[in-house]
Length: 240
Image 1 (cartoon, rainbow, N blue to C red):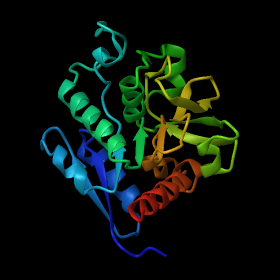
Image 2: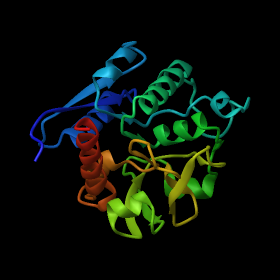
Image 3: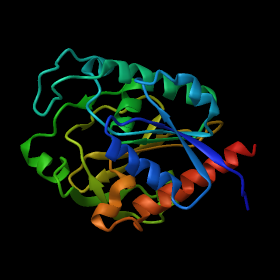
Image 4: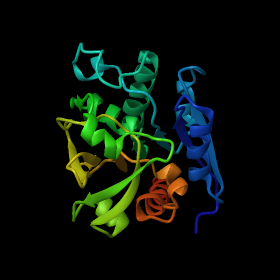
């Protein structure tokens, strides 16, 4: 059993309380250092001290990331953070080059899809936002998992419940990606590499595994199993 310390680079979500949810979830009771990576700290070089990367959630990526000039749409942020988009794009590209495991959550998954040439539905619309968009209590809904996918291998189930907080979703899939999960109303909820040969671990999820404890879902396969598998892949990759 590996007993050394591992370091995980975590992009700053823009909110201290939300950032702490990620930190606590990743650390658990294990010997894990979480390195905050943020455009505010201008510390891209700290990526090279990390054994794996987590791209966190937050405000919408600027539409220019998916070739759109439309910045006024329902539930758009008052102000985009283009510097964060560029910073995290550099993090993802460098992580792939360095063969580091990557877990991309909510906005993080959407940004990866855009980096790889995909685009987004800018707003789900009033009806679908009732199921997916953030409220004080969160939004629980079912996740349907593709048999044979990496996510299925991790969770060992074709259906589970997640805590959701988004008003956008993937539209056209980026290059080299595979859809591994959808919500019960058809939204893309998970992605992974289509061809995993020669690549480090990558998983993108639209839900929030780091805060599922708020819905008493912290033992769900969509939270507990993902954390454990991500850490296992990080250790294995470190020991190569």
